[in-house]
Length: 247
Length: 283
Image 1 (cartoon, each protein chain N blue to C red):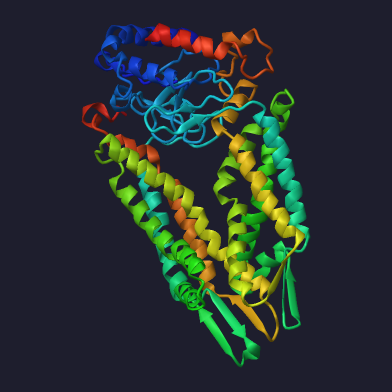
Image 2: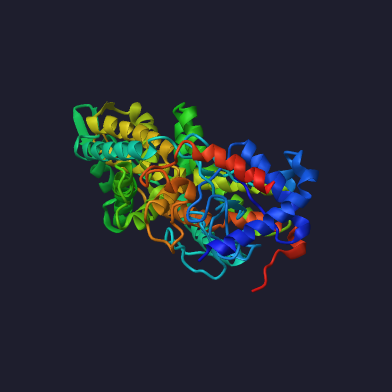
């Protein structure tokens, strides 16, 4: 049933291509800057999960079962909402104690350490390497993540050069990759609390910040996952011509 | 194989150059129902959209070891490897065995001034089992034990029949999709780095002993990495489609492959030759 239509489309394409190809055939990087047909421009919708292409208006990918969305800015609402949730949880995660340490039969000290407090303590003991890792992983990285997701959501769909689009995609991929690694803090707290239960000598208990931090990381991950990277490419120069397909 | 085509005549020129660039780079992809290289711009049959940037590509058959990248954003669209499914199945089963060991053997032991304590993997998760932190206990168990095991089992379910040359299991497509959704939440490798950080922190305080579970978990991470190298989700989707998961009738075997055995993946002869031919015809 599809076959005749496909053949016709292929013929159509081949006809035009052969007519114009010679002028372009030599330049390899012509392709990189040439206008491209996207699924959206062709009035089709591509599946973000498996790549299969369906007619516009199709709602569920019949191959993998994922919900199909056209690349529009509506999806950004979810990004902002999850990002806000992540930010809200990040505040108590830093203000409340991450670890409660009791040492030397309670005579010595019963300390409550926040994330930053833990870093300072590590520096105090001379563990500069570990201090740097913890500081970068639990303070710098979350802040960069918030900033980067917000930036991507703001610039999504705005006009961009190819270089800018590639930069945005790179940023998105880094954020997507790095997001889950922030969970490392929660695991460290869990391991320390489970392990250091030495009665009178020392014991460590988790603080409420661990929960807030875990939630913050999870919300930020969902926020990054909600961002549709296809939006990055929608603002490319050709946009003014015929970017929005009718309907 | 990159294809990008404006239907407006003036724009059509670009595609030929693009098709050529991609062919030179060895980026070719697999055709399903239509004769290889044919597509339908009204239904989307025979086309693939890059999940990162939405650029349209024609599906073509890839040879083992070839990599298909998006012409615009360079995202890897497919990377089939010889015997990948068998290896993923084997590595996934290994992961399950190692996880069982990691769960039930002692994980870490600590001692100081006559006081000692040891913990298992569950002990670690149970660190949060005080009052309102209980949900975090559940989350930790899910992240470091349940999801890695579930993913491994789902991959076995999806790929085992195909690795043995049979039709995929009935729910192979939802199973594989579930495993893809779980991927970012499966945090075994993050947990082991967390363990390393915790050990450094405790190192000065007490003497430590790593139990068998610790080493099993380390091995688990390495096996997981090896498995990931062989996993190309686009290739698995394509294989599922080509080998009988029902879509809408697009899964008919292309002419070039109909002659080969139906169970075979890519016949060695067809890929390269037909790609050259199709590009030539189009360009």
